[in-house]
Length: 252
Image (cartoon, rainbow, N blue to C red; front, side, top):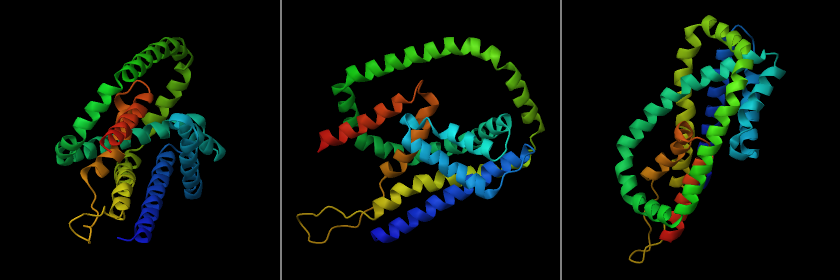
């Protein structure tokens, strides 16, 4: 596969991802009894992606999408419920796909990467312990702050529950295949680019073998959304990326 072909395929994957996500949020908002055009749905998702790229820990993504919905005259409560339903529809798809990928590729991936990650963790264990301790402290502080704030949120939560009860089932059911398209297109980008990479030259032959997508190229894109489900704060995800890069540098 040539680099031009790989990039064209990646552009098509990104477009399919944006279209699927635009339909998903549009149908969820329509299920809540409000109207939003496909164009506005497309723009608010693209705006959210841009905010994720520009803000630390991707923290600006959902506020940017909420702002886009408010600009499209969607009430704040309905916008919040739509994003919550979007997450509910997406996570079962992510967990099922992650389970299949782990079952298929994790043993081979761990055989290759396990020793490197272990060596990197041993070398950087003070930083790992420090980040874990700070994350735990921040999580406990956040719980204390959230307790009085929860009382102030009772009325908005009751309004959100009204939207939940009125929500028809068809947008949720339709969101499941759209969530699969969202996940599949994002995971496929790295293997496609890997197929376009030139293979390293071998000493025993002048013709290098064709590049292939290894199990790591399938597992790495899906590690990041899964890390958010068990880490107290998203800094743990950064530690994972640092550990992987340290292991690669050690190997070289």
